Image 1 (spheres, rainbow, N blue to C red):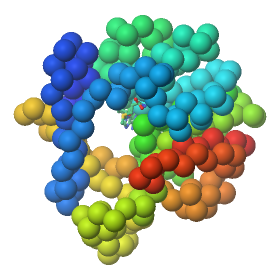
Image 2: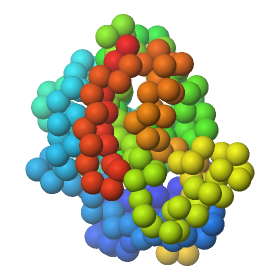
Image 3: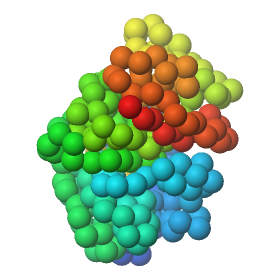
Image 4: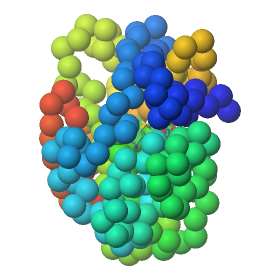
Amino acid sequence: MKDVFGKALMDYYNGDKTKIRIRRDDNYLDEEDLRIYFSDYDDFPEYEKEILKYADGKILDIGCGAGRHSLFLQKKGCSVVGMDFSPLAIKVSTMRGLKNCVVSSAFYLPFKKNSFDSVLLMGNNFGICGNNTKEFLRKIYSITTKNGKIIAVSRNPEDTEKQEHLKYHELNRKRNRPVGLVTIRIEYKNMVGNWFELLMLSAEDLRILCESTGWRIERIIESENGIYSMMLGK
Ligand SMILES: C[S@@+](CC[C@H](N)C(=O)[O-])C[C@H]1O[C@@H](n2cnc3c(N)ncnc32)[C@H](O)[C@@H]1O
């Protein structure tokens, strides 16, 4: 695996603040400053602060990045495991003080039944398994306790007026894909990562998806540009 995002996180941690580029498969290009991934609790947006209040018991942070949420919860005295498929992201999290970390892919959750009470999917990570999100939710169901929760962030793809995004939705409809499924890759300096899929859902599509996986929407906190956090229960 080309660990492009991890390399950018490590460089940022060491003082090189070069931005990453996120390229979509229609060639739409966005730039991202990695500062957000190193932010402290005080700088977390309200929709994150509010939803993190539900995290309790044994916590798994899937796609933890540089570990900002895990570190906050660890400081509060919670039992938290950070997981990411990027070895360098896990290295940065460890260097920043995160005690329990695992390098693993969300497509393969190496945990026994009933291992966790809360699973975090922050930073738009609800959809990191793309078109396999249903299967992903079922797996999380099996590794969580009977009162298990998912605490996550996603985005309503249709909450936009940008022509480029509306055209992409149209392309998705033509390709028979969900409107909010994007194929993207990370580019950083002269490095180019692999293409991967990210699913974004409206609250209504989320409800339909949850119904077939055993999860129930307990709380949604809406923010700007279609971004929302959610707490799902069993
Ligand atoms: C947008 S960042 C969010 C990081 C962190 N949750 C935050 O909000 O600061 C996405 C993270 O998820 C990780 N990731 C993406 N797909 C993954 C997968 N299939 N399995 C494990 N980690 C994944 C990336 O390596 C990256 O660190």
